[in-house]
Length: 477
Image (tube, rainbow, N blue to C red; front, side):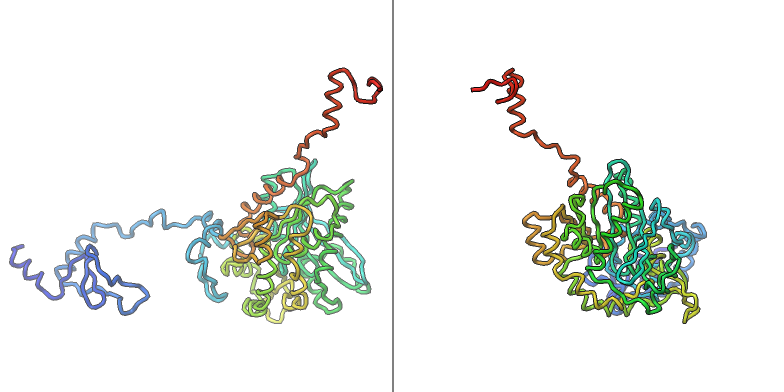
């Protein structure tokens, strides 16, 4: 091509350099600095490709013909099943960590293998056995339900209490991780009354079902024959009763060393039990997860609004699991698959046949007890006997009393900023490691006490051959 032809093409008004773009009414090249970088969110700075000349089109076609029909996807852009499964531990560090998707938007929907990864897991994947512990008290018949992996030899027993609206399977993945670190440790995780498979009926309507399902327990209680009682005093009494009943059922001569662990409402319950001292010297320590009196009382003001925004019904159990992961209520897919099935049940005669799955626990009905759960929690946490651990999802949750206690070294504070409210479900491995280290620091059997001064003096005297003063070989003055 002659030089004068090229010059004439360059002067054509439709020609632009290949590395140029138009923004803010001006032309820029990617090589040159400019102050008006185009933003994808600003319509005024959006740029569009100009119309190509016939010569440019023919040149582009000749170049594109040399490429394969479809460019391969780089490895960094492919998604593996493991990456999706473990995404909860890293996703909160990205910008999406601040997003709370609407239940109607499929923001994180994926097709293919992900569907199989969302199937539910059973309790047998995490615990050795389940126990149903019947009890008659105050004109009520209660069948307490617990998940149990017994301790071996002289191992400790971690006793777990879940939060409001949750269940004993909330600690399933954490329990599995604890056993990896402490193989001799036992785990006892209960369903509180009106949660999971724990059943409450009147003595008059007592049935022979001593192993109720979640649906049977929920439908029996929804009949209105039993008045809901989730006061802190009642839940604390239930926890102590379950521990001693488990000892009787398992035939333990004495209780193993106990570490109480409670999340949210469960943290208030185990703190109350520790404060009352009903487990005696067998209680080594207690750990509270993501609940502080000050922030909890503040959050109660918006609790009703939150409950009104979450779905009331689900078309399937799978959709319930997906809602928990996509809304980032639970940021660990495996934990959601284990714990969510115990939070829902399928109605036998649903009002909406297209969405038969509903919540096991009516959290709105628990409103009369909300303030009772958390008043005085910080003071009791500081004053109760035993080792203390507070695990939070953010330091902003500390109130004044706990800040002072932390500066005085009265308890151990651990923060998981990458986790949500369900810290033990979002980060089960890290939580288990913290609990294992917490137990080791408070394990009395590992303590080696120095000998008493009197014993040391007696031993020294015996070595000299003089015997203990006043002893059979001693010399009387």
